[in-house]
Amino acid sequence: MSEIQIRLADINRRAAEAQAQRDRQFYTIVGFHLLVIVGALFLFVSIPTGRAASHQQFLAEQEQTHHG
Image 1 (cartoon, rainbow, N blue to C red):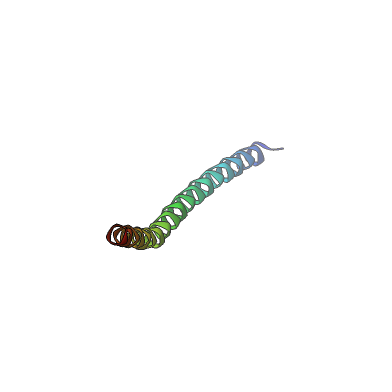
Image 2: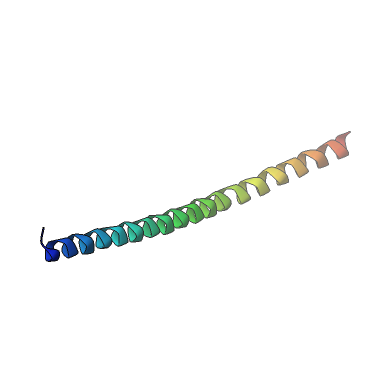
């Protein structure tokens, strides 16, 4: 192999490594964002459900207190 071919192979190798690193960073960021989105969706669903269940429990306790 000539010196130019060796240098081109080295440049291509380093470019491929840099691209792989950028891809890893991109997928890490996307994964993190998906975790945050799923967590936010979980909160938006569970908080009103929890409040409704708490309210139902409070009403049941009040009913027992008044009838017991």
